[in-house]
Length: 264
Ligand SMILES: NC(=O)c1ccc[n+]([C@@H]2O[C@H](COP(=O)([O-])OP(=O)(O)OC[C@H]3O[C@@H](n4cnc5c(N)ncnc54)[C@H](O)[C@@H]3O)[C@@H](O)[C@H]2O)c1
Image 1 (tube, rainbow, N blue to C red):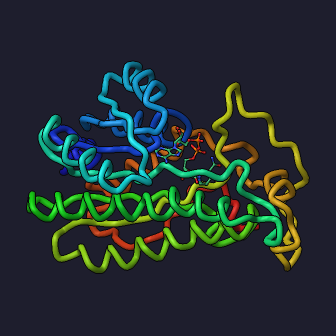
Image 2 (image 1 turned 90 degrees about the vertical axis):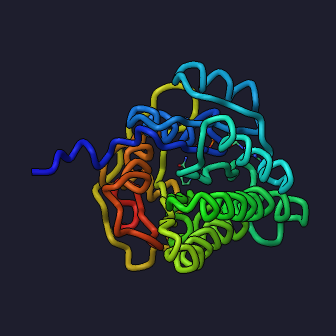
């Protein structure tokens, strides 16, 4: 009988996690490290990345994903310093302060969010794909989308960017499958990334209104079937599935990890 532990063993694999200084990225870096991968955390907040890396016993570097030249160099440096590049997690992204009604969103707000959430993700996918194809040993690319790609709530800027991430993922999965590079999107639901413990969710039981768009994000969180906020390590567990041999035949999917958000 096969030892299932070997399916999640990432010993000998190298992972790069963007935006890994805190929040979901730190949760994913934790899970991949626990499974034995050598992990490089990058973040525009270099000090935060160094602190998190020190706690996990992994590596760190400063990186602004909107700088395509720096992205190429960062992924080559990961390969050169750690020996290969087998797993890329495109987690860097922004949403706080980018919501609102369409008429209130100025050009800078739109452009800034898309340059991080979409352009940056594309630069990282492009650089990683060329390195992985050249290595010839397959690979995994995990793009962090959101449940907002399916159920709008934050606003056109963010919701649109995360839907773009889901479709970029599919297109890339098709293109890279012959190289044994699996490309999947992970779609977190509400996950507590602020300082301090997640507050209790006390709401009424799920109540289908027939019109999800009539719900606000707050309404939906109050009715979250799981009854608790997601913890970043729960996103890490889902990312581990996509990064490991457990998902050897899985590519091009959009995987919600959302406590039932999309059932509402
Ligand atoms: N927290 C949630 O409920 C939730 C739900 C769905 C999707 N997401 C997605 O998960 C990802 C992580 O979000 P989070 O909640 O952990 O946020 P967070 O703010 O806690 O962490 C994001 C990290 O990205 C970094 N970052 C921002 N701009 C960057 C840039 N230009 N280059 C490199 N790094 C940059 C930040 O410094 C920060 O460390 C994002 O893509 C977000 O859209 C989060």
